[in-house]
Amino acid sequence: MAEFVDPIEQLTLNDIEIGARLVAALVHSATKFDAAPIAWPQLLELARFLDPKDAAMARAEVLGIGMKLRFVAGFCKANGYPNLASLAVHPASTDPGDAAERRAIAACDWSQLPAKLADYVKAARAAVPVRLKLRKERPAEVSWYAYFTAHREACKAITSNDKKEVVNLVMAGLDPETALRRFLAAKAAFALDSMA
Image (cartoon, helix red, strand yellow):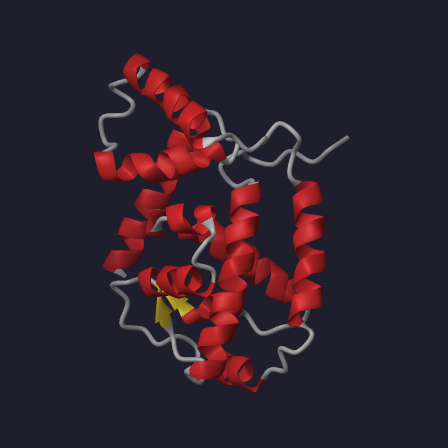
């Protein structure tokens, strides 16, 4: 019998694809800037710069970065690398993070990373439930709009800026209700992190 995974905590194909690009961006940043912390918005911009034609990367939002960083941390742990995700910091954070972890990241030999990352991505994709099929942007927007109009009270906290990340989650295969719950959980965590 398969192990139950809360859909809010389930990695999607989008989390995996963006997470893999964040691994590359974090390694680039770590080697170029001596493992200095990087704020989430700057990390996304760096990843977009490194892969400017990637449509999924272009749609990525700061509020959705948590699950992608979970992928990064899982990859590092599975392959015996220091945790690259520890370099990514909340935009409001002034905490430079663990100095020992940063030194380990700076000293790490990343030469085997491409092959190990490709293998990890392949295994992570295989672990994604079949029901989480990728959708095109327009059908995802239509699905979200139908849910939104039928559940206005539940969606009252969603602004037009928030809609982009919710649609990203629907595009990643989540149903609109689960996408809304995952987005609201990420938004609450983001707000808590900004107060810390």
